[in-house]
Length: 220
Image (cartoon, rainbow, N blue to C red; front, side, top):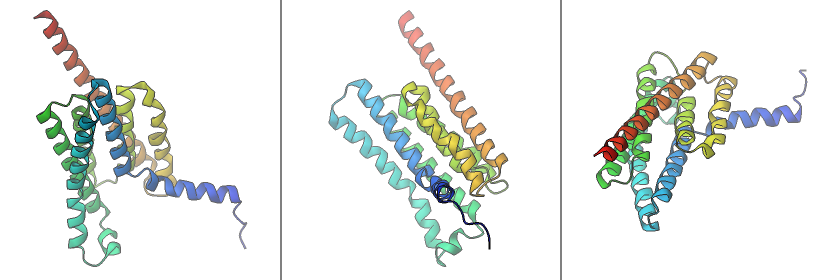
C-alpha cells in the first residue's frame, strides 16, 4: 500500500486542480473588462444610466461571443466527450473566435458612441493576443489560460497601479497549468511572454499616440 496523502497536500492539490476553472479565460476577461468599464465611467463622472448602457453593451457582445461555442457543440452531436476528445485545438479555435467577436463588437460600440479610449484599447489588446494563440493552436498547445489571465490583469495594472495585485492570478497560472499536466513549462511560459509583450507594446503605442494628440491639441 502507498503512503496516505496528508490532508494539507490533498487540499492543495484540489485547489490547484480547481484554479484553472475558477480563473477560466472567460471569467478573467469578463471581470477584467467590467473593471475597466467601471474605471473609465468613474473617471468621466457620467451618470449611472451611462454605466448601465456600457455594461449592457459589453454583455451583449459577450453573448454574441458564445455563438461559435454553441455551434461547435451542436455540430458534435456525440456529446461533450466526443466534442472535446481528440479535438482540443478545434475548441481553442472556437474560443479564439468568440474572443475576437466580443472584442470587435465592444470596440465598435465604444468608438461609435465615443465612450472613451481605455476600453477600446483593451479590446485591441485582447484581440491581438488571440492571434498567436489561434495560429499556434493546431501545431503547438500554447497556454490560453495563461495568455487570457495575463492580458486583462496586466492591462488593468498599466491603466491603474492599484490593480497590480491582480497580477498574482497569471503568475500562479503558469505553474498550476504545468501541475495539472495541461501544458508543459515551455507552453505556459510562452503564453506569459507573448501576452506580456503584446499588452505592454500596445499600451505604450496607445499612450504615446495620446500624448502626441494632446501635444498637438495644445500647440494649435
